[in-house]
Length: 428
RNA sequence: GGAGAGGUGGCCGAGUUGGCUGAAGGCGCUCGCCUGCUAAGCGAGUAUAGGGGCAAAACCUCUAUCCAGGGUUCGAAUCCCUGCCUCUCCGCCA
Image (cartoon, rainbow, N blue to C red):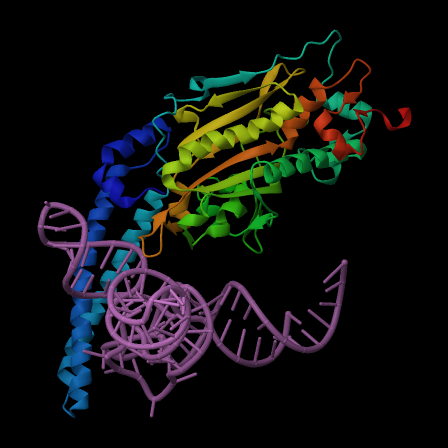
């Protein structure tokens, strides 16, 4: 959410931002509603003052043993009028809020301008794409041959998009998660959080998933609880409605969670194997930062995420997302993509975003620089570090051998009981 | 799931026959004074949001806020209803 005062004072900046993000939001209507709102507030507060004055008078009269009937009668009318105006005000404010909720965050000046992903700018590319002197298998065939992934049975027990990991596949998944969390905790100074995977509406609103993305999420209707699409939601909301102290910033949390996405509207797109699934695992980093440091932290967050790929010895590239491709709440975002030799294309394995104070304002996460300083909103950032599903695609395909086995990257071997290769179980 | 208790300011904690109570008192914190240092002591201050005034800040003023929403009333932290949360006991399950 943007600051209403800012919108009032900079309507052109906001209108431009809405266009850049391909969003629809009626700024003129917001301004008009704001005008109405303030005028009603003026009126209603005047009435309330009168009412309060009169009530006090009644108390005095009664104490003095005099008759207050006339004042009471007069005040009754005032109260009635104030009540009606309050209702009108509530109505206006509700409309204003629903308009405000549709206004996206303003893209940062360093985000490349452009209406869709074709305008994204590659800012970094490392490693050579793997070359094979045999025909590389895709992750699905590899998974089947080695009997470590089972998409068919996942479909049976849950539905398509719910993969099953087996044997060394399950072990590898767990190894990746542990390796990533350990690196962030031990080397990058993160505090580990193991959050709930189900959250309430307020939390979904706080990080900006609601109201826009309600249909993309699984909802347990009986309890009005949502399955989280990312650990960003519970972890960012950890400090919802809180006042932090300046000296505790930055706060860096890392959390593993399963992530659930309905992917409504993308049926038939990238449906093979791990490319687009309804449940996947992700290690997420969340930062709460001083406003003036958030862009520095954004770059740092990117490095912390890509270090995983350096250590796994996987080639990747980094894109700076164009304004039109940025998510609703983001001011700036880097996507990290890893290479799939079988698909011959780049796969998004991480998104690293700076939301500035957009989420903080929605979720009311503030801080004081020092005792007695006025409250300010923190900046929030987050980055996948990383999502395992597509990472698994690149990993299996890149590290495969001509025997149909998969070499385990050295950094993961301690997590794999010292094994250096995944073979068929009966080949052992 | 059944029965009961409760949700007040950064914290603790008064206030429940409705009326200067934004809210006693204490702790904490900030500033000042004082004692050779520390401790103790003394004095003052110490919420947030919104509206209006001011070119703007300082500041002034008003409104709202005692879990949330609704109701009764001239007037509610105090009475009534609903919801949420916490705690205790019983049952059930891991």
